[in-house]
Amino acid sequence: MNSGFLIGQRVIFDYEIIHIAYGKMRINIGNKDYICQKGDIILLRPGIPHTLSSVDDIAVSQPHIHFDVTYDEHSEKVYITFKDIDKFTDEEKTWIRKDIFEDMALCPIIKISDQSKFLKTFYEVIDVFYKKTDVYQLSCKAKMIELIETIIKDNAVIHEKPQADIALPELIRHYIDYSFKNVITLDSLEKQFNYSKFHIGRVFFDHVGTTVIKYYNEKRVKYAKAMLSSGASVSEVVEELNFSSIYAFSRYFKTAVGCSPSEYRKIKK
Figure (cartoon, rainbow, N blue to C red):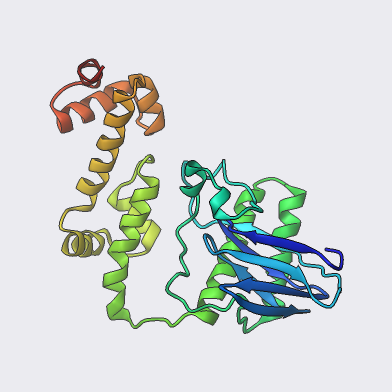
């Protein structure tokens, strides 16, 4: 960016990692200025108002990556915003991602213990993204996980193991809340969280008061009811919730609700 630049107050939906390759830049967050210089690595987070501006009329090179940690029904709509939250539509306000770093007292200029390794991966993400070779999405995802892991390890206080049984059910619940449209089983959760399905089932029930599968099914049934009530066809619901067939969905729905999807749709018209 050329000298004298100013990006007025804005809120972003997702995260942004910036590397100051050369030059200087000012970030203002919460009426506090942070002067970022060559070599600094910056993390901007969702929902936090900030401004970016030139310092001493010096141009700045600031390669950056916008990223998110979850995929949901809003993901395809999210764009890089340059406006403040009062200019968001009601729908856009729902696109602001949950901040996984919200409990960490992070300065936007983050600490990185092995900066050369971090930046090597950072620029590999950019290179892979622009080249868009086969399975580039998987390559980007793998490298982004490395970057996020480094940020957490170098900037977070890691709790002892006893805290894991408190955090795990909340992570599972959050995962189901965002992924219930997909097929989820105890076996898939075992692979996702690297705990046995028996441990997952126990800590979830102890913390939430219901079983994992019941919680998951209630989410899916509630969503199916909402779709049918709004006029969606049974086949549309089947596709949206990734059932193998209309028959499989109809049997599932009737067991949970007491009537077939078609009958429910007629009642709600």
